[in-house]
Length: 168
Image (cartoon, rainbow, N blue to C red):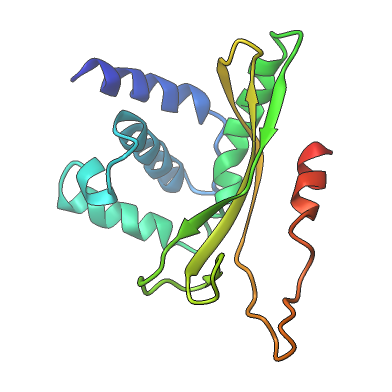
């Protein structure tokens, strides 16, 4: 096993020790996925997986309606707060980014910068030290925009609200 894979296994076990998806099998699958993606963050699901059965299991996990991304992230958010406690000054950096899934048959997508683009938005808050050491993600919001109505207006809360929520 290479050094990065060993480090990612330790990281996933520590970072997601408190994970509770309501089913021990889901918890185990989530930790395996975290290990695989941490070992090769740029890899696709098939490339990160160790064989076809693990690839199928990953897709089933992500398609499981009882798995909520916020519940999955909660242990990491808690670990980030614990790491923050060791530092007198923390910088909390926020930004919104587009997740562009244009051309893919995915449910729940909305328009991005251009009405024809399809995807979602994510607005995370990252915690870093003044020396630029990353401590983790504190929170995040993810949403898909609604289409504009006939008057060219978009419903839902103002997206600028995410900045205030992150600050709070």
